[in-house]
Every structure is written in C-alpha cells, then in structure tokens.
Amino acid sequence: MLKIIFYGAFFVLILVFYVPEINLLIDYEYYEEEVMPPPNNEYALEGQSVFAKHYLITDSFLANDRNDLISAFFTTINSGANGFTFYCAEDYEECFEEVKELTKDAEFLTYFNNFVHPFNNYKTIGVTFDSRGKVRINLTRLYSDEEINILNQKVKQIWDETISDNMSKRQKIKEIHNNILNNSIYDQEKAKAIDEGRTIEGSTSHKAIGPLVDGLAICSGYSDAMSLFLYKMDVTNYRISNEKHVWNFLKLDDEWLHLDLTWNQPMTDNQISLIIETYFLISSQRLKELDSDAHYFDENMFIEAQ
Image (cartoon, rainbow, N blue to C red; front, side, top):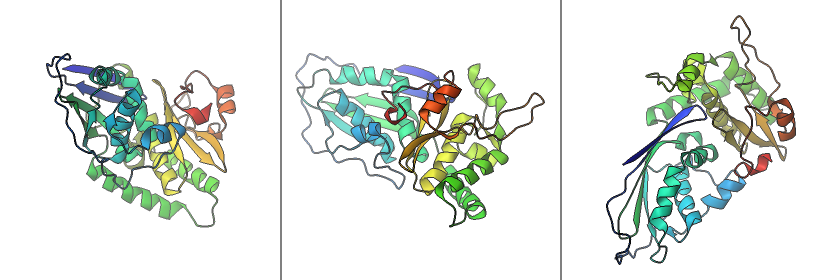
C-alpha cells in the first residue's frame, strides 16, 4: 500500500493505491465486456474548459494509452459516482505501470477537482487492479449529502435575499461576492495549521460550507462558495490552483476573467477585514501585473488563462 499526503491549494488529498502481487509477464485472461460510462448525477458538467472537454467526452472505457486512463479517472470524478470499473486493452502492456504512475502524481489528480462542480470534488481516491486488465476506482467525496442539502438551501436563501431579475450577470456576481465577504472572515488558524501540517477537527473552512454557513474560510472555501453561485447563474467557470492558492476563473461576455475573493478581503494591522475590488473580474494580463507570486498557474492545464 502506498499512501501519499499532499497539501495543495489548502486542502488535503490522501491518495491510497493498492497493488496486488501479480506477474506482469504472464498471459492475461482479459475480460470481454462492454463498459458503459458511470451514471452522471445532477452536478456532472459537459466540460467547462479545454482540458475538461479533451478528457471528459469519451464513450470508450477500454484503455489503450495514458490519455484513456486520464479520461477514465476524470469522467468518474466528474460524474459524481463513488466508484467505477474499466479495463486495459490486451495489447496495452504498460497499462498497470501507467496507472501507478498516474496515481503517484498527486498534484495532477488534484487539479481534476478544479474542472468539476464542487459537489463532485473528491477527497480520497483508491485504485485496485487485477491480472485480467480490470481497474477499479473508488472515491470518497469532499461534500457529504447532508452538506450538499444545507448548502443548496443556503444558496437559495442568499440568492432570494440578494439578487433581482433586472441585474446584469456582472452585478449579480458583485452582489454575491460582497455578500460572501461581508458574512465571513479568513480563517488564519486553519491556514496556519495547514502550513504546519496539522489538522483541525471539524473545520469546514476549506469547503463552501465554511464561508456560507460557519463564517470562516480559506481560499478553497471561498472559491467553492463563489463557484456554486456562478453555476446558478449559468456562468461558465472553473477554479485555478497551485500549491499555495486557489481562486475563481469565469467566462463573462465572451471574456475569461479572474475573481479572487480571498485577496479581495485583506486584513489590516489591527485585524479588521476590508473588502476591495482589486481582484474582481480582471484579465490574466492584469493578474500577472498585480501579482505573480501567489497567482501563478500551469498554462498547459489552465489553457484559457494563458
């Protein structure tokens, strides 16, 4: 058993990979059966980015190469299913080794959460396979059913109290942005604990329930919360992250723009929270001019932000 603990974008990914003892030189007795895609729940997306469209849209789950493996993982995560089984093609001799390599790349797999609905984000991934080409993915989801119900009710409440039909999408985004920041503060204790490799039992700051219900958030909580409202507005969006930070990225009036609630709520020297608009719907060029230390990203992954 190999266990990897990755502290990225201010949440914890625990990746567990189990490899049974097999002889890779034996003749496999491969399964021969058609594999249907995992059923999508109501939060599954069609593809909000170039990356998602490339790996999400697939109707084949007989893996012939590494891209097929990525598609199987990404499709399972996006679907909301807790598990899925697919198969390696008989002539794909490197399949198991490449499954192992893929699951070792914790940062790459963590990025998948950015491109799916927050409610379909995963917390842990477990992978098993056998000598007949069968690969099983098992997921533990970040949000429980109870949390999803609470958040759906809270989103509706805030929407009904804040948004009117005559507002433009930009105005709606501004109202929700201000509402979230007016009713929550940055959780410095949680951020410090993550930096020190500690956990805080019962903390919700890394999820949308933190800012929307408990009034405390770190960057992943803020970005998840904002994303829920963007989807309610039918605004195409995903989250951008690196090992230090995560923020929102959205398409408005045919332009891709950055929105960072965390950095729009700075703390004064006497620990008073402010609300600013410096990182409110700005271009990638403007983002780079303002800050390149915390807002860097992989342009091969977050293609629209180049």
